[in-house]
Length: 222
Image (tube, rainbow, N blue to C red):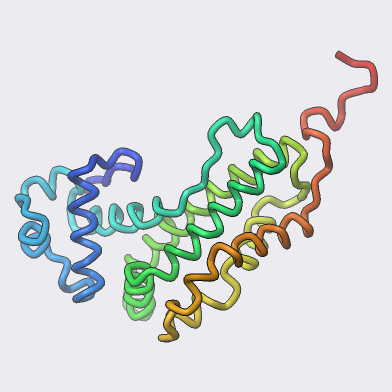
């Protein structure tokens, strides 16, 4: 299988094609996602699809990665973050996560993966875990580590801290949406809920006020 490029390597045209692929999946399920159908929908050649994304598994992997990339985890210049900047980045992550999970594309992909769990392979489910949720978690843990290094939070287990963060943000909402409850009524409250979830997280993992690399520095040392 030819590996699809990482999300940050997609160009504008490839992103347009992936958006068309997502629409096909939402409207008709995985069976609707054929190279012929996508070539027609995106007005491109099959050869271009194979060159950009490889085989069908590569295309599915690219779709999932493209969707996961919509959850922003800003951490540029993380070594210079103030406490307010750290909180703001966590709030951005939380609001984006809710928005993506509540989107019809995400719900369609997850429902499709769940329907395939009893089948041998369950490739889409693995892709959602590895290329979707796994990549989001990896980037979020990097932000949490940067915050801990600056003394904005304190935790012993970064994986457990991320799971707590995810739980505070998502709660039981995603499960309800997957079961058919409309997220429309919740959308207007995403920003406020994101702020509340981050405040709760920061209460559970309070700031030390001391950058991690200075915690063990002897008094008077340079």
